[in-house]
Structure formats: C-alpha cells, structure tokens
Image (tube, rainbow, N blue to C red):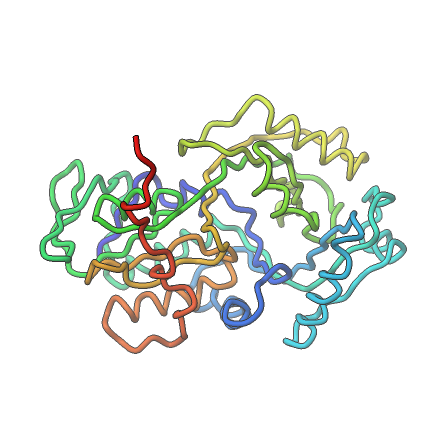
Length: 358
C-alpha cells in the first residue's frame, strides 16, 4: 500500500479537529450503528495500535438557548438512551452544577451524553506507525495532481515526481475530494466551510465536559460568517476552542482578521472567569460536507477501481470500523458493515442539457 499525502501527515482537517468522539448529534439508523460500533473499538484501540493517543470518556453538553430546539433534543436523548448510551436532559440547576464556571442564564438547559475524547495528532501518528510496521509506504508532501484514466479505470496517479501505476485507488482527501474526483472524470458535490480554532496555555482543571451549542450546524451552514463555540479542556490543561466559520470558494489554511477575536469574545460570554487565560496559537482548516450531511463511501460511479471516502460527519467514532470496511473493499473482501446508505452514486452528475445557457 502506498499513501500519498499532499502535506504533512495530519496537516489538514484531520489534525485540526477538536478530537471529540461525537455521539450526541449522530443521525439515527445506519450511521448510529457505525458510531456505536466504532466507539466500542476505540476503547481498546490504543492497545491494538500499541500507541497512546489520550483516549478518555468525556461527557458532552449541548447548550439549548431557544425553545424550538428543546423538544428535538428531548427526542434525540430518548433515542440515545434506547441505544444504550448514557444520556439525559439537564435543567438550569443541573447545568449550573455540571459546569460551575459557565454563565448559563440564557440557556433553557442542556442535553448531556457520555462520549469520548482523544488527541487527533497522536491518533494519526499511531495509525501511521502501525501502517509502516505492516509494510505500508507513506509519502508526505507528495500531492496527487491528476489521474491517467483508461477504459473507465484509473491506471495511474500523477504527481510532481512522475506517474505512479495504480491498481485500486482510494481518494479520501477531505475538501479536495470533489476536485480530485473531477480530475478522474467522477463527480461528488463536496462543499466546505473555512473553520478556525484556538488553543490556550495549560490551565488548572476548570471544565468538566466538552461544551457546544444546540444550533451549531444551523449556524455554520446557513450564514456567510458565524461563530459557534465548542470548547473542552485537554489532558494537558489547555482549552481547545472551536470554531469560527466562513464560507469561501477557495481552500486555504489562513486565519482571518475576525475569526479568533470573535471566538475569544464568545468564549468569554460563556466563561467570564477565563478572561486572564492566555492564547497560545490558532489555526484554520477547510471542513467538508455533502448536501445531505452524510458521508460518501463507495466505488465512484463510472470508475471501476476508484473508491471514495469523504465527508464523514462523525469521523472519530466511526473511524475504526470504516477504515476496516474501506480496506476490505479495496482488497475485494466481504465488507464487514453495510455502507449502501453512503454510496456516492446518490449524487448523480448534473445533466448538461439542463445547464443554463451562456
């Protein structure tokens, strides 16, 4: 196996994420099956990979400000309880007891469930070390620039170092996936936002949960520019704060002039006691998603040997299961899970006959 990475390993959205193993917002049905199966695997994955990545179980609080969000979250928490997840609705008094430093007077309450948390850069390194141990070749700083396609098959991958012959090809390039598929003659309507985050200096234990807002997706996917706070205290003591989001037509990693100040202001609105905390650094990455906000996993229509895996939505808890399923598909082995609901064929290419006239 050969892995081509455009930059450093984990240098894109994978290493820029908050490290949260999400359950709370998980869609019901097939996707939740993957989440719960993956969460069970994460419990033993450090031992399996023989590398620590700071795995721990951590509660998540979804702060509910508007009445319109209360009943949907009541129903979601009931569903999670039915699936065996520890979850509950909290009233304002419960919320104050759960997070004493939170200024929660504007919130109706919160939805709580037990999730997980890890260090994404250490997880990437753990997988990379295990892959090399099993014979994989990893080539960072080697972007794929195009494909050689013959008779509906990708026969070569173009790089600055030359053409590499291809058997089965996996495209899992985040926000770049749509462009790469188009270069091979495929189609996937990948959209993305530009998301910014920051991290503080190590602090004494202050927060007890990962904390986010009930209108997170509603906010970041409908506004041109918005902030929706998500914050957790890392094992190091640092606060990782996400995310300031802006729509953009270009993929880049540059912090804006508005994003980090806006994140800091919103954080202090929730936690005034953090006013003296110092920020160490900030970063930005493109966060991809599809119109139905579900992942695309499967063989690309019209290309016999090109497999696509992108826009996972709940990446960390599904990763242990999906990585094995993808490997099985590439090796022509039986797939251990049903991925039919996520097949990229659900997004047919646009009909040229319906394109507007110039």
